[in-house]
Amino acid sequence: MTDTCNGAQKLRRVLVDRIDGARDLDCMNHLRNVWIRGMEKSLSKYLNQMLRSSLDDIDSTLRVTTSISAVIRAIDKEFSLSANYPKGHGELFLEWIRENYPGVLLLHVERASGSRQDLCTEGCMAIFMNYEYYVEFLDQMLRKRDANEKASILQQNLFVILTSVEMLALSRLLMSIIHLSISMPVRFLAGKSHQFAKHGWSAADMSRVIDTLHSKLNDIHKNPSLILNENFMMNIFQQYRNELPPFEEYWQLIYHKKQMKVVSRTDGTSVVHYKRIRRRLFHPTKKADKQTT
Image 1: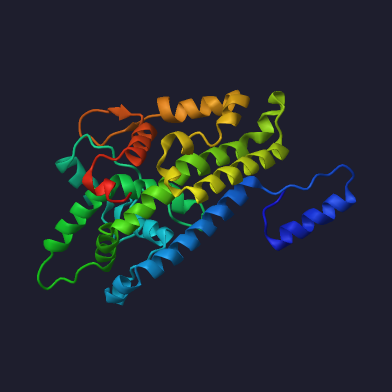
Image 2 (image 1 turned 90 degrees about the vertical axis):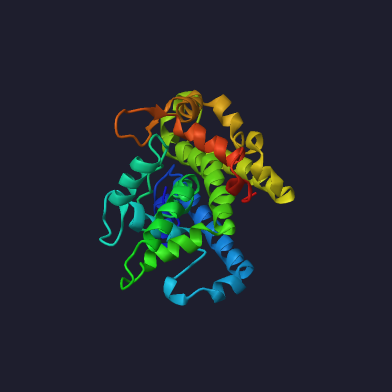
């Protein structure tokens, strides 16, 4: 089993030819990342064409882009609590949240270093769940600077992007929803297949998962509104949850048991955060969220 780079594929073919009984398999987790990266490239290209006139009107020094991975990296620089970027304001933002919105669920900014191809889906959840706080904080920071102080290019960049309905729609509809309904389940199955022998499952059964996904994506292609249908999207792999008890246990853990602490100065209140994320993605109540539909 290898990824899809030429060198690894060549070595795999050589080994299969020389070793009796050897099987030729692609790494499904790597393929998942390849699919996601291809999706991001296509969507960025589409938005570039759709927003061309608006992008041309924006000062090029602000480096505004439709690449969601670039946006996530910018958010990581500005809002990450690890303060890896000296010009960022992660610690100040956390204090601001505690002062103005105590008890709010603030998703962690996804670690954006390296070349993770699934960054564009996993990191989008923080964008969609936190954007209203990001925008308000950035607005205050850009307004209160001294008259002779230059405005932060990073903050201006993020303010422009996070006030774009189209970019918020991208983070909600085609990234966060895809992450919950497709990326996370495929990642679990690809990473755990070797443990499911007693259930009559092996890495070769991932081909069935791909066939199922291909069929469901064809349904979405014919009827794009299905991506907003919680029952359809969150049950794409229902047959494998029925077939594999550990997969069903994982599903129940994520959406009914796994918890995350809210931002608070005094207590350690926790909430089932994935359940909240799922509800907001599929059943938006805020005006700004509804505009992304």
